Length: 273
Image 1: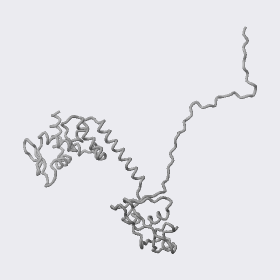
Image 2 (image 1 turned 180 degrees about the vertical axis):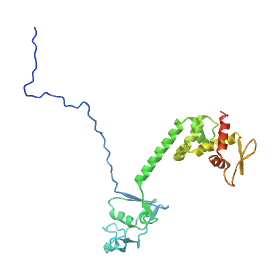
Image 3 (image 1 turned 90 degrees about the horizontal axis):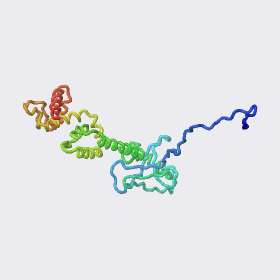
Protein backbone atom coordinates (compact mmCIF):
# COMPACT_ATOMS: atom_id res chain seq x y z
CA UNK A 1 0.00 0.00 0.00
CA UNK A 2 1.44 3.35 -1.03
CA UNK A 3 1.91 5.99 1.54
CA UNK A 4 -0.27 9.06 1.21
CA UNK A 5 1.02 12.41 2.36
CA UNK A 6 -1.25 15.15 3.56
CA UNK A 7 -0.26 18.76 3.76
CA UNK A 8 -1.63 20.36 6.84
CA UNK A 9 -1.95 24.06 7.51
CA UNK A 10 -0.34 25.22 10.68
CA UNK A 11 -2.80 26.18 13.36
CA UNK A 12 -3.66 29.85 13.45
CA UNK A 13 -2.20 30.61 10.00
CA UNK A 14 -4.80 32.14 7.62
CA UNK A 15 -5.54 30.45 4.35
CA UNK A 16 -3.58 31.98 1.50
CA UNK A 17 -5.78 33.60 -1.13
CA UNK A 18 -4.97 34.84 -4.64
CA UNK A 19 -5.07 38.62 -4.52
CA UNK A 20 -4.01 39.12 -8.14
CA UNK A 21 -6.91 40.75 -10.04
CA UNK A 22 -8.12 38.67 -12.95
CA UNK A 23 -8.43 41.68 -15.24
CA UNK A 24 -6.87 45.05 -14.63
CA UNK A 25 -7.95 48.12 -16.59
CA UNK A 26 -5.13 49.25 -18.82
CA UNK A 27 -3.96 52.77 -18.30
CA UNK A 28 -3.63 54.92 -21.40
CA UNK A 29 -0.10 55.03 -22.74
CA UNK A 30 -0.39 58.56 -24.10
CA UNK A 31 -1.68 61.66 -22.39
CA UNK A 32 -2.71 64.94 -23.97
CA UNK A 33 -1.31 68.09 -22.44
CA UNK A 34 -2.83 71.42 -23.40
CA UNK A 35 -0.09 73.91 -24.16
CA UNK A 36 -0.92 77.58 -23.66
CA UNK A 37 0.68 79.71 -26.35
CA UNK A 38 1.79 83.03 -24.91
CA UNK A 39 2.89 84.36 -28.29
CA UNK A 40 0.47 86.66 -30.12
CA UNK A 41 0.02 87.40 -33.78
CA UNK A 42 -1.77 90.46 -35.14
CA UNK A 43 -3.10 91.03 -38.64
CA UNK A 44 -4.25 94.10 -40.55
CA UNK A 45 -8.01 94.49 -40.87
CA UNK A 46 -7.79 95.79 -44.44
CA UNK A 47 -5.37 95.12 -47.22
CA UNK A 48 -1.81 96.23 -46.67
CA UNK A 49 1.35 96.28 -48.69
CA UNK A 50 4.43 94.13 -48.29
CA UNK A 51 5.40 96.32 -45.34
CA UNK A 52 2.92 98.49 -43.42
CA UNK A 53 4.22 100.77 -40.68
CA UNK A 54 1.97 101.36 -37.70
CA UNK A 55 1.56 105.03 -36.71
CA UNK A 56 2.90 105.67 -33.21
CA UNK A 57 3.92 109.32 -33.18
CA UNK A 58 1.75 111.27 -30.81
CA UNK A 59 -0.45 108.25 -30.05
CA UNK A 60 -2.48 108.86 -26.92
CA UNK A 61 -4.86 106.64 -25.01
CA UNK A 62 -6.94 106.94 -21.88
CA UNK A 63 -5.41 105.42 -18.75
CA UNK A 64 -8.28 104.43 -16.42
CA UNK A 65 -5.92 103.91 -13.47
CA UNK A 66 -4.77 107.56 -13.50
CA UNK A 67 -7.96 108.87 -15.10
CA UNK A 68 -6.02 110.81 -17.71
CA UNK A 69 -4.92 110.69 -21.34
CA UNK A 70 -1.32 109.55 -21.83
CA UNK A 71 1.01 109.02 -24.75
CA UNK A 72 2.30 105.56 -25.60
CA UNK A 73 5.50 104.70 -27.49
CA UNK A 74 7.21 101.45 -28.35
CA UNK A 75 10.81 101.62 -27.17
CA UNK A 76 12.36 98.14 -26.98
CA UNK A 77 14.83 99.08 -24.23
CA UNK A 78 12.23 100.69 -21.98
CA UNK A 79 10.23 98.67 -19.45
CA UNK A 80 7.12 100.83 -19.95
CA UNK A 81 5.14 101.92 -23.03
CA UNK A 82 3.98 105.12 -21.31
CA UNK A 83 6.05 108.03 -22.67
CA UNK A 84 6.06 109.85 -19.31
CA UNK A 85 7.64 106.78 -17.67
CA UNK A 86 10.41 106.41 -20.24
CA UNK A 87 13.92 107.82 -19.95
CA UNK A 88 15.28 110.88 -21.74
CA UNK A 89 17.29 108.68 -24.10
CA UNK A 90 14.41 106.38 -24.97
CA UNK A 91 14.63 105.37 -28.61
CA UNK A 92 11.41 104.65 -30.42
CA UNK A 93 11.37 101.73 -32.87
CA UNK A 94 9.05 101.29 -35.86
CA UNK A 95 6.31 98.70 -35.58
CA UNK A 96 5.87 97.07 -38.97
CA UNK A 97 3.39 94.58 -40.37
CA UNK A 98 4.95 92.38 -43.03
CA UNK A 99 2.51 90.88 -45.51
CA UNK A 100 -0.27 92.13 -43.25
CA UNK A 101 0.95 90.38 -40.10
CA UNK A 102 3.18 90.95 -37.10
CA UNK A 103 4.32 88.23 -34.70
CA UNK A 104 4.81 89.22 -31.06
CA UNK A 105 6.83 86.69 -29.03
CA UNK A 106 6.47 86.46 -25.27
CA UNK A 107 9.98 87.90 -24.95
CA UNK A 108 8.66 91.30 -26.06
CA UNK A 109 6.08 92.22 -23.41
CA UNK A 110 6.41 95.95 -24.12
CA UNK A 111 5.52 95.43 -27.81
CA UNK A 112 2.60 93.28 -26.72
CA UNK A 113 1.43 96.00 -24.32
CA UNK A 114 1.85 98.71 -26.97
CA UNK A 115 -0.30 96.85 -29.48
CA UNK A 116 -2.89 96.01 -26.84
CA UNK A 117 -3.30 99.68 -25.91
CA UNK A 118 -3.00 101.15 -29.42
CA UNK A 119 -6.20 102.90 -30.58
CA UNK A 120 -5.87 101.19 -33.96
CA UNK A 121 -6.49 97.83 -32.29
CA UNK A 122 -9.92 96.48 -33.20
CA UNK A 123 -10.40 95.46 -29.55
CA UNK A 124 -10.25 99.17 -28.67
CA UNK A 125 -12.68 100.20 -31.40
CA UNK A 126 -9.94 100.75 -33.99
CA UNK A 127 -9.97 99.69 -37.61
CA UNK A 128 -6.29 99.10 -38.34
CA UNK A 129 -5.43 95.67 -36.91
CA UNK A 130 -6.70 92.82 -34.74
CA UNK A 131 -5.51 89.70 -32.97
CA UNK A 132 -5.18 86.77 -35.32
CA UNK A 133 -6.97 83.88 -33.63
CA UNK A 134 -4.88 80.99 -34.91
CA UNK A 135 -6.69 78.40 -32.79
CA UNK A 136 -10.11 79.51 -33.99
CA UNK A 137 -8.94 79.46 -37.60
CA UNK A 138 -7.61 75.93 -37.12
CA UNK A 139 -10.92 74.82 -35.57
CA UNK A 140 -12.89 76.39 -38.42
CA UNK A 141 -10.67 74.74 -41.00
CA UNK A 142 -11.08 71.41 -39.20
CA UNK A 143 -14.86 71.76 -39.32
CA UNK A 144 -14.73 72.63 -43.03
CA UNK A 145 -12.67 69.51 -43.68
CA UNK A 146 -15.12 67.35 -41.72
CA UNK A 147 -18.04 68.91 -43.58
CA UNK A 148 -16.38 68.23 -46.92
CA UNK A 149 -15.78 64.62 -45.91
CA UNK A 150 -19.45 64.24 -44.95
CA UNK A 151 -20.57 65.73 -48.28
CA UNK A 152 -18.28 63.43 -50.27
CA UNK A 153 -19.56 60.43 -48.32
CA UNK A 154 -23.13 61.36 -49.23
CA UNK A 155 -22.23 61.43 -52.94
CA UNK A 156 -20.70 57.97 -52.61
CA UNK A 157 -23.26 56.25 -50.38
CA UNK A 158 -26.65 57.68 -51.32
CA UNK A 159 -28.77 55.89 -53.90
CA UNK A 160 -28.89 57.55 -57.29
CA UNK A 161 -32.63 58.24 -56.86
CA UNK A 162 -31.82 60.34 -53.79
CA UNK A 163 -29.18 62.28 -55.70
CA UNK A 164 -31.29 63.13 -58.76
CA UNK A 165 -33.40 65.93 -57.17
CA UNK A 166 -30.24 67.55 -55.83
CA UNK A 167 -28.55 67.25 -59.23
CA UNK A 168 -31.53 68.93 -60.90
CA UNK A 169 -31.59 71.67 -58.27
CA UNK A 170 -27.94 72.53 -58.92
CA UNK A 171 -28.50 72.53 -62.68
CA UNK A 172 -26.80 69.24 -63.60
CA UNK A 173 -28.13 67.00 -66.34
CA UNK A 174 -29.53 63.69 -65.13
CA UNK A 175 -29.68 62.12 -68.57
CA UNK A 176 -26.14 60.72 -68.40
CA UNK A 177 -24.98 57.62 -66.57
CA UNK A 178 -24.87 57.44 -62.80
CA UNK A 179 -21.10 57.93 -62.64
CA UNK A 180 -21.35 61.25 -64.51
CA UNK A 181 -24.06 62.47 -62.15
CA UNK A 182 -22.04 61.49 -59.08
CA UNK A 183 -18.93 63.13 -60.50
CA UNK A 184 -20.72 66.45 -61.07
CA UNK A 185 -22.20 66.34 -57.59
CA UNK A 186 -18.79 65.48 -56.15
CA UNK A 187 -17.34 68.71 -57.54
CA UNK A 188 -20.25 70.66 -56.05
CA UNK A 189 -19.82 68.92 -52.69
CA UNK A 190 -16.16 69.92 -52.60
CA UNK A 191 -16.82 73.55 -53.56
CA UNK A 192 -19.62 74.17 -51.09
CA UNK A 193 -20.17 71.21 -48.74
CA UNK A 194 -22.53 73.08 -46.42
CA UNK A 195 -24.91 74.07 -49.23
CA UNK A 196 -24.70 70.58 -50.69
CA UNK A 197 -25.59 68.81 -47.44
CA UNK A 198 -28.43 71.21 -46.63
CA UNK A 199 -29.95 70.59 -50.06
CA UNK A 200 -31.03 67.08 -49.01
CA UNK A 201 -33.23 68.46 -46.23
CA UNK A 202 -34.61 71.40 -48.19
CA UNK A 203 -38.24 71.11 -49.38
CA UNK A 204 -37.43 73.69 -52.04
CA UNK A 205 -34.91 71.35 -53.66
CA UNK A 206 -37.49 68.61 -54.12
CA UNK A 207 -40.16 70.95 -55.43
CA UNK A 208 -37.81 72.75 -57.80
CA UNK A 209 -36.64 69.43 -59.24
CA UNK A 210 -40.27 68.50 -59.90
CA UNK A 211 -40.94 71.83 -61.62
CA UNK A 212 -37.76 71.54 -63.68
CA UNK A 213 -38.62 68.00 -64.76
CA UNK A 214 -42.18 69.04 -65.61
CA UNK A 215 -40.73 71.76 -67.82
CA UNK A 216 -38.36 69.37 -69.61
CA UNK A 217 -41.13 66.83 -70.24
CA UNK A 218 -43.42 69.62 -71.49
CA UNK A 219 -46.06 69.36 -68.84
CA UNK A 220 -45.63 73.08 -68.27
CA UNK A 221 -44.05 75.85 -70.28
CA UNK A 222 -42.16 78.76 -68.82
CA UNK A 223 -41.93 82.19 -70.40
CA UNK A 224 -40.48 85.43 -69.01
CA UNK A 225 -44.01 86.54 -68.08
CA UNK A 226 -45.85 83.38 -67.05
CA UNK A 227 -45.87 79.66 -66.31
CA UNK A 228 -48.65 77.82 -68.14
CA UNK A 229 -49.90 74.27 -68.65
CA UNK A 230 -48.36 73.05 -71.88
CA UNK A 231 -51.43 71.33 -73.35
CA UNK A 232 -54.16 73.83 -72.46
CA UNK A 233 -52.02 76.99 -72.16
CA UNK A 234 -53.95 77.74 -68.97
CA UNK A 235 -52.12 80.12 -66.63
CA UNK A 236 -50.54 78.59 -63.54
CA UNK A 237 -48.78 81.65 -62.19
CA UNK A 238 -47.62 85.01 -63.52
CA UNK A 239 -43.90 85.82 -63.46
CA UNK A 240 -42.85 89.29 -62.32
CA UNK A 241 -40.34 91.04 -64.56
CA UNK A 242 -36.76 90.00 -64.01
CA UNK A 243 -37.50 86.81 -62.05
CA UNK A 244 -36.76 83.24 -63.06
CA UNK A 245 -39.97 81.41 -64.09
CA UNK A 246 -38.80 78.13 -62.51
CA UNK A 247 -38.09 79.90 -59.21
CA UNK A 248 -41.49 81.58 -59.28
CA UNK A 249 -43.25 78.29 -60.08
CA UNK A 250 -41.32 76.55 -57.30
CA UNK A 251 -42.36 79.11 -54.69
CA UNK A 252 -45.94 78.98 -55.95
CA UNK A 253 -46.09 75.17 -55.66
CA UNK A 254 -44.91 75.41 -52.06
CA UNK A 255 -47.93 77.54 -51.12
CA UNK A 256 -51.35 76.25 -50.17
CA UNK A 257 -52.76 77.68 -53.38
CA UNK A 258 -50.23 75.82 -55.50
CA UNK A 259 -50.46 72.48 -53.69
CA UNK A 260 -52.90 71.11 -56.28
CA UNK A 261 -50.52 72.04 -59.11
CA UNK A 262 -47.65 70.30 -57.36
CA UNK A 263 -49.74 67.18 -56.80
CA UNK A 264 -50.73 67.17 -60.47
CA UNK A 265 -47.10 67.44 -61.57
CA UNK A 266 -46.02 64.63 -59.26
CA UNK A 267 -48.75 62.39 -60.66
CA UNK A 268 -47.73 63.13 -64.27
CA UNK A 269 -44.06 62.47 -63.57
CA UNK A 270 -44.79 59.23 -61.72
CA UNK A 271 -46.46 57.83 -64.83
CA UNK A 272 -43.24 58.25 -66.79
CA UNK A 273 -41.43 55.65 -64.74
